[in-house]
Image (cartoon, rainbow, N blue to C red; front, top):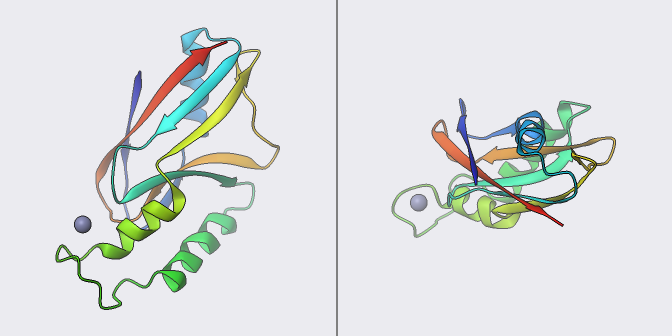
Length: 131
Ligand code: ZN
C-alpha cells in the first residue's frame, strides 16, 4: 500500500493527484491491473473529473455548496455536517485500470482528492493489483 500525504489549504478544495498516483503506478512496476485510491476520512473524498479547464472543479465545489449548505439546521454538534454529507455523496474510493504501466483515464479525466473540511493534512491510500 502506498500512502500519499495531502496538505489542503482551504475549507473546500479539489486537488489533482493524478500525477502522484501515476508515479506510484510507475514505480510499482505493475504493468496491467487495477489501481484503487481510498481516502480514509469522513469529510474528504476522491473523484474523477475534468481538470483541463480549472473552472470545472471550481463549479463542482460551488454547486456542492448550493446543494449542501454549510449550515442548514444539522444535528451533528461538531459543526461540519455539510462536509460529511459531501464526502458521502462523492465516495471514499475510485478504481482506475492500469494498462502497459499507465493509468487508463479519458483525455479530460483527472483524479481529484476532495477536501470538504479543510485546511488539514490528509491521506490517500493507493493499492495496486496486477492481473
Ligand atoms: Zn464531524
